[in-house]
Amino acid sequence: MYGNDFVDPDEPLNAAEGGALDEVLDQATTRGDGGGFDELIAADKRIEPRDAMPDDYRKTLIRQIAQHAHSEIIGMQPEGNWITRAPSLRRKAILMAKVQDEAGHGLYLYSAAETLGVDRAELLDKLHSGRQKYSSIFNYPTLTWADAGAIGWLVDGAAIMNQVPLCRCSYGPYARAMIRVCKEESFHQRQGFDILWTLVRGTERQKAMAQDAANRWWWPSLMMFGPPDTGEAAKSGHTEQSMAWGIKRFSNDDLRQKFIDMTVPQAQKLGLTLPDPDLRWNEERGHWDFGEIDWDEFWRVLRGDGACNQQRIEHRVAAHDNGAWVREAATAYADKQAQKEAVA
Ligand code: BYC
Image (cartoon, rainbow, N blue to C red; front, side, top):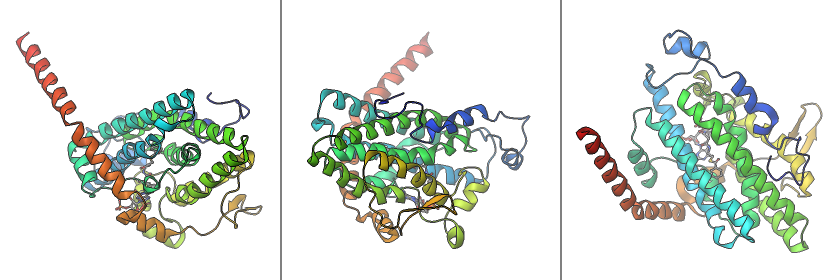
């Protein structure tokens, strides 16, 4: 348990800690005696790389897993921005570990995508040339130290809500990668909450900094779940098909509501106000009602018009170019080892 100096350690802070992950592990489906794709999906079994699968299922997974992997590595940038300015050695060490975890998540996910027959270099090329997306959330700037807290609390909190169900995704390598990712995200959310918990008990300026960060990150965090996909919007995106294939287990709207229901009491505990005047408990629904999300802003950011889109890609491409010698050295070493083994 991390950072349990501010809450009852038995009280779950997020979906992974709420028992959802244990439930997934308990129910981990084992394969039956084969069967075709449709039979495996109908029986809620895993599809493995060796199995035959419809081309569209493969393409959907490559699109989603690649986008997810790209989000993890681009997501290193906003917080990486604060490593050199973290307020203490302890905070710096924790933040470095967190950012390194995100790199690791990217690696698990690129590996999962590669089991579908694509090459990581090709996926990175698509990211760099704007042909594949990464999460909208990482196009917002990190203006103060409190943003490191708000990202951990809200962005990682939203990520866990979305990703715990992906541990039950029908595609085996993706589902298995998500189990470790979710455990690590749980630590990330706690460290974010802990940063804010410290700030809200600090000076008036520190409290104002925490409030300002919550104001700026709340709505973009709700957009992370993706556009509306229930009611009239049910036919518009990928959700219906992805749910039929067991890739997505819940709609974007359901996960968004679960996240809001989980997060409002946490904001109350922090003494922070969420920037939505329409936020109120609906006794009848048993959920928090919330205001209109600015979907124009979401689509604008996706089209490349967010505050940091250009900067994020430029930085990524430069990091990739600067790392060329590492890839060359690793390839040369692997070739040398292979030659030695061939001779032995
Ligand atoms: N940003 O039909 P929909 C993290 C696109 S990293 C950008 O609902 P789908 C972390 C969507 O791609 C968190 N685009 O699509 C890392 C589609 O466009 P295309 C990343 C978005 O795929 C570092 C269109 O909108 N998590 O946790 O069924 C530090 C229609 O959407 C977004 C994942 O990637 C968005 N937010 O569902 C801290 C989780 N939302 O592709 C934290 C895995 C939607 O047709 N991914 N779009 O051109 C998923 O669960 C699903 O892909 C989504 C979208 C729920 C995101």
